[in-house]
Length: 350
Ligand SMILES: [Fe+2]
Ligand SMILES: [Fe+2]
Image 1 (tube, protein in one colour):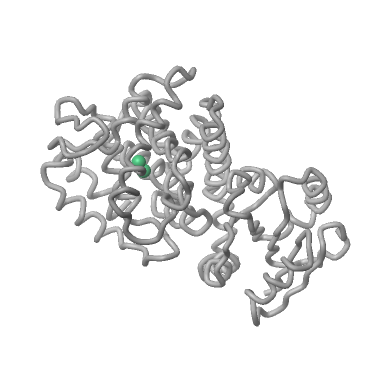
Image 2 (cartoon, rainbow, N blue to C red):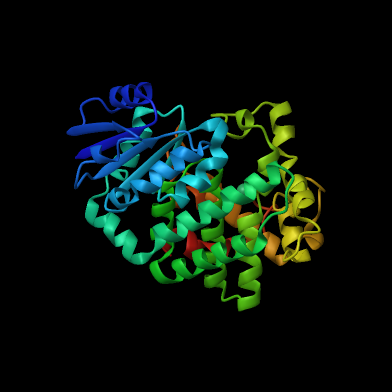
């Protein structure tokens, strides 16, 4: 495979070259030398500071070479993760956050071992485009919440609607595979939850207006995580009690950030605040009991838990869908049993 590295300084090129090791063929060039992009390369790895307007302009100059390259992997400093939206807008197919591990870089380059033909099939189905649009929308929503600005709800609802249409078209399994291959962390989680909720809603035969409420709620559900420090949010392994208490502030933080925003109904606000409540009253933040938890929230909670279990995380093996469904079945008293039974078809077969 011919891989071309573009960076804004030589050290980044050296670092990426040593990470890639003995790839078939590696070329590289500094961003200001657009002529160095080889024709017909199969992947580009781009490591430039996206805060710099000159860099953005220079990247736009090489956009023709970008667009003819099947995989376009942007490497972004974790502290600047909100620039992921900018990367996707520039045509990224993957965004990796520093520190980048060899394994995740190779997985991105190889599309987790998938062939080029599979990647072209993705393009036909539109799942990759829908996932990228969703990630852009999530990134701008998270940026708005973390800086105390108003969220563009129309953009997020549109992106969620497109995810639902894509699942109806290409299937749930294809969606899961595409999202897990191309997206990381909280955005991957939100895209998986939105897809799972949409697939579940389609299976339940919900009316169009309920579908819209459900997939929009899924898209917004974890926006309060924009207020949680990354060290806790992305911590591999178990959280201690103090960290867990911080994480548990995210439903109320999301609710506070969205209330009063145009285009957000009370049902969506309710789902954002209460998606971690359980029927037996053991959830958070308000310890609600069965009758106080609405239908959309119950569907979203099942979708959220399932999506979290089957996420693709660097530090743990991906759980099989059947195993994740078994865990849902074991949560007796917490989740609505008939809904969990109805979810079986989505979890295992859809
Ligand atoms: Fe959550
Ligand atoms: Fe969640």
